Image (cartoon, rainbow, N blue to C red):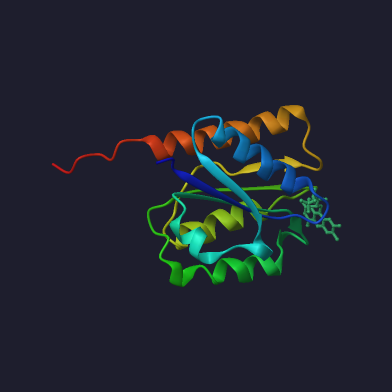
Length: 150
Ligand SMILES: Cc1cc2nc3c(=O)[nH]c(=O)nc-3n(C[C@H](O)[C@H](O)[C@H](O)COP(=O)(O)O)c2cc1C
């Protein structure tokens, strides 16, 4: 059975969405079954059963969108502890949102890949390659054997 990744995004003009699609493509190229979904349409049961979760938002007025913050607050009861996580987003000049998302995901107990992935404005080919790389890194983290307890 393939491991699963859910890539959740908030994107006003499509820049962060393009990152989300490339992250999913990178993970799928390494045998993961990924789904890309707007934060607005997320099925929380599916999110709970995903093995890894990547969450992205663009930065507006020096932070993530309020709607994304509210979405993250709704995840608390889902018990996502121990899942592989990643945060990403497009930005213009300051780019706080992915860092704030990663912080929230850590508070939820996810094991978030460091550093977060940020792309300035519209992602170019080289940026999309970086996104694919993050997808591959998520796949690698999912395939790691658990360390036996001595
Ligand atoms: C009203 C407004 C406020 C913004 N505020 C910020 C900001 O504080 N910091 C920043 O880095 N980018 C800021 N941006 C730029 C967006 O993050 C950038 O356009 C991004 O590429 C949008 O990505 P999206 O299409 O995924 O929403 C702002 C853009 C707009 C329109």
